[in-house]
Amino acid sequence: MSTISRRTVLSATAATAALGAVAACSSGGGAAGRPGSDAGAGSGGGKPAPGQSSTKGTPIGDGSNADTGPQPNQPKAEKLKPGEAPPQFVVFSWDGAGATDDGQFTRFLKLAEEHKATMTFFLSGIYTLPKEKSSLYHPPKHTQGASDIPFLSEGAVRNTLKLISQAWLAGHEIGTHFNGHFCSTRSDGNGVNKWSPEDWESEIEQAVGFVTRWKTNTGFTDVDPLPFDYKKELIGGRTPCLEGQKTLLPTAAKLGWKYDASSPGGQQIWPQKVQDGKIWDFPLQGIPFPGHNFQVLSMDYNILANQSAGSTKGDPAKYGQWRDQARDSYLAGFNRAYSTNRAPFFVGNHFEQWNGGIYMDAVEQTLKEIAGKPDVRLVSFRQLVEWLEAQDQSTLRKLRTLNVGQAPTGGWQTFLGTP
Image 1: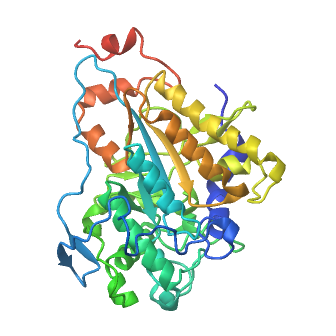
Image 2 (image 1 turned 90 degrees about the vertical axis):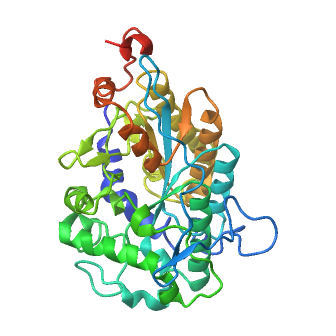
Image 3 (image 1 turned 135 degrees about the horizontal axis):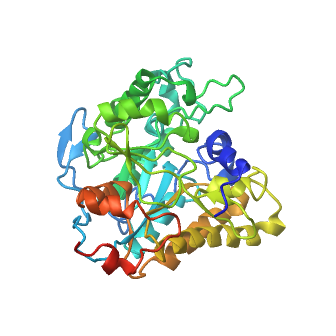
């Protein structure tokens, strides 16, 4: 099996979110799909967007969050029966999760509804804090109010809040992408890779604080509370630039988190726990890259980095070819797992319009192609955790013996049958 190229690994760590910080998470430049109005954000009138509800529940704190009861549209985690094939889990996740002017958030909420899929949205905490209040953010090792992604306008914050509510009510998970998105590729090298566990604790406390005190910070009176208790809902995240996991994990364990999705360069094998068996490790994975003898990480930017050398505005004449290559790469990763070891397949994305929006199209085409196949479950990381923790440890240990692209000897009935 070929390995992930060095160029791919670099784009997964240093370069990935560095560009994401100026493009996917940017409030400037229409081609980037900047956070803004997000068409169809459900601001009132007409048919409610997927999962939208006027239910306010029991207010929490200043009323920014409300307890509306158990999250809707959650599957029951069931233990595998002896000899039963495991489901093919696929997790589509989104970094930043801000409302965009080109309606990408709404687009994928509708797509998920159509195909009975749930996803994970890693919300950047400062996307609930208007730029006029940026001084409320005290980033570790940086000056007050600093951030390598821009703060949003009041209108963009308002629509982000509405979409996050809609997503949760539709059954999607709301994780965290933390706040300031500081990468090691900064000119001063002062990125999250240098943070201590205490720095991460401060960052998380602030990210949660912005989400749970947005009414106080914004003064909005025309937006319903988020229909969940974020302090209880938050069980995992993905770090900026896929950096800093080593020092994040002790804090994640201390906070009772269940998983982390920050590790780059993982393989398509069944996941295991890290940090003394406390945290499930869900890395981006190396997947086949059509036309090449190396693998690429399963994220939009990493594919872009190997197509247009990191430029988000490459040669338009190649957009069609690159879109098909991105889609075929995702499908190759999916099919390799689906036809062999059934390892969960992870795809990371941003709401963006890189290279003419071809990566958004590739993700949509991939989801449509795999949805509805036998045994396929399009889930959130939270739902995957619940399924894993419902299984016998002996079953999980057996699954972890299967390497990338390795089918169970004798088929699933023999492999996972009664000893």
